[in-house]
Image 1 (spheres, chains in turn green, blue):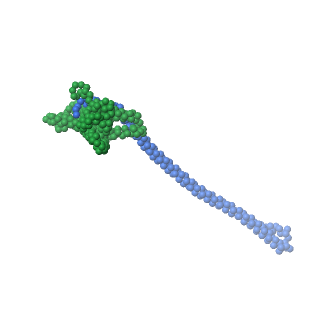
Image 2 (tube, rainbow over the protein chains, first blue to last red):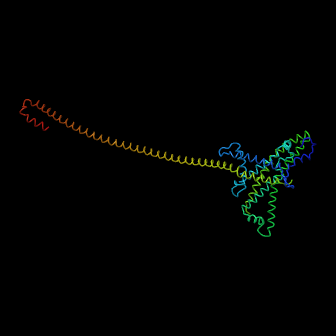
Image 3 (cartoon, rainbow over the protein chains, first blue to last red):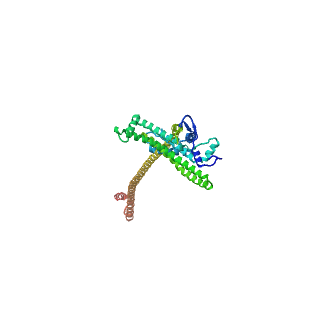
Length: 269
Length: 156
């Protein structure tokens, strides 16, 4: 909400759904959502930096509370990976990747809890007209994650089976080796890759985006008067508490799917 | 909802974060956890070894106690046997001694009897001579008949 102007619901939502865009070249594509990039990078550095800071001073003796918490987190992730990945040393790549995904996505989702109007108010004072604080409510962020996972799974598929083996599987599974079935197999595999990537990113995006919109609507209600403020506060509190589940669950699902896809890439058919 | 350069920027950031976790964060943690696991495993192994050592030494102690008990029983048995034997020996020695004393006493008694008999004989002879003297005082000359009397005395 911008002070001084006539209040308008459409403007309010529009305002909160606008990215801070900086064009870097000709065309639609060559723009950068600075808010998404800066917020996510700061969160990533904060989260992983905090873990690094704790882990650097990690003792193999009796851990203090900080270390115990980080170990809990790491062992939780490691336990999940251990249950899904049986194709070699998970410590080399898969488990740390899962940790990265979990920590980063959790923090990005958690931005949903910040009161948007306070955040944008403060940023407005600093001179930023538009700023979306939740990076995972930006398709660019979620697709960046899922496309990275897709590339990684193709990389692991090729490194596990060889380029020939991977191409062979593209054409010869799941239906069979018969040359007549090659197009069907290839089509099936392409659909699988695309749908995996789409569902992986859109699930996260949809959940967080919907949560964000619901908050906007509640804050809209809160702007209508005393009763609206009261119920907006009450329902906002309820939604924020319920959002704990969504934030953690979506991060967890995203991590698990990442591990599942990377494990599947190692499997021979 | 539109895709733009943000996608590539986010992918780059993701790659950087993964690299950071893989290369820096995870190995640190893994080292600490593995060292702790090793410490725990070593401790457990040491405890087990201690337990085993305890069992061994308990067994050895039991063996030693049993051996000592056997030995002491042997010693007591031998001592008892020896005591019985000594008693028997003492009995035999006492019996022999008694028999010897008896024999000595008997020979002494025999000698005494012999001596008493001698004395008695002499006294009887002298008594007889005295009696005869009383009777024959007048008729018999002591000096004349001394030879005769001596002969009688010797015959008694």
